[in-house]
Length: 370
Ligand code: OGA
Ligand code: NI
Image 1 (cartoon, rainbow, N blue to C red):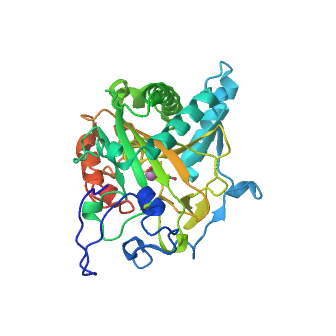
Image 2 (image 1 turned 135 degrees about the vertical axis):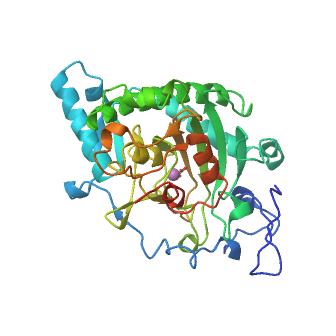
Image 3 (image 1 turned 60 degrees about the vertical axis):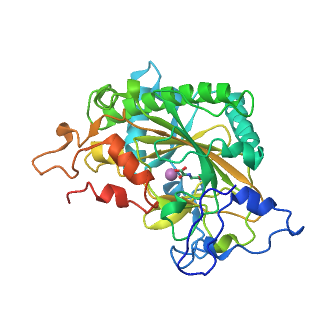
C-alpha cells in the first residue's frame, strides 16, 4: 500500500513505502528478498543491534533474572502475602522497570484468540487494510508501517495496527470476530493493570487508590498496539523498533509463540533479551509513572530486534491517565527539592511523542527540570 511517498536526501530515488509484509512477500521478482532496501539500514543511526545482541534475562543468575510478580498474591486476602507482592513490585519497578506477571487469571484461550486474530488481520489484502490507514496521530484506528515515516530518516522493519480502545472502544471490523475478543481482552487487561497500580501506589507509600484517582483511571486512555515483524534477510542491519520508552503508566505486552523473541530492554547499561514464557504478561513502567513518582520509578528504554527465521507478532497495550489529566509529580513524593518534572496534560504529551520520530526518552526530557 502506498502510505506516503517519502523523499530521502541521501538517494535520488525516493523510497516507495510499502508494508514490510508486502515487501517480504512480494512476488514481483518471483524470488525471495535477499537483502534489505537501503532505507531500512539503520546501522549508522542506531547501535548495530547485532553487535550488541544482548544477554539473556534467564534464570542462570538470579540477580540477572527478570522479576516475577505473582498476581494471585497481590489480590490475596492474606495480608502477609499481599505485603510480599507489594515489596516485589517496589523492587521490580525500582531495579528493572520490567517484570513478568504470572497467575493473572486472564484465560490463555483469550490471549491466543487475540494473537491469532491479529495474524489474520495482517493477512488481509493490502487494499483491505488501507481502509484503516488513518492519517493523524489522534485518529482512533491507524494501520501502517515503521513508526512515523513522515519524520524518519530510516524506516523500521515493522508493520502495526494502533487502536484507541478506552474510554471509547474502537476497532477494525475485520477479520470477523476479532473486535469482540479484543474488546474482552482489553477489559481484562485494564483490570490487571489497575490492580497493579493499586499495589504500586502502596509501594510508593501512597493510598492504594491514589493513582487510580489522581490519574482518573475510570476514563483512562488505553491504546492497543499490534506489531508485526516479518522475517528479515539481514536482521543485523535493521531494527523492528528503535530504543524508546512508552507514554502512559504501564504497558502490558504479549507475543506469539516464536522461537526467537525480539524484545530487548536496557538494564544497567546493557541490552538484555526478554523472553516471556507462555501465558504470562510482560509489564513495563512508562513515562508517566516516572513523572508521577518524581523519578523514583524510571521508565525503561526498550527496542525490538528482528530475525531471519520467523514472523514475530507482539501486542503491547499502553495504559495511561485520562487524556485531560495534567500529570506532575505527586506532592507527597516531592520532599523539599523542586519537583523533577513539569506537569503536562497527558494528551499533549501523547501527541508530541506520537507525532515525532521515536527517539529514546527525548519526550520525557522536555518535561524534566533536573
Ligand atoms: C511497543 C514496543 C516491543 C515489541 O509497542 O511500544 O515496545 O517487542 N514493542 O514489539
Ligand atoms: Ni514500547
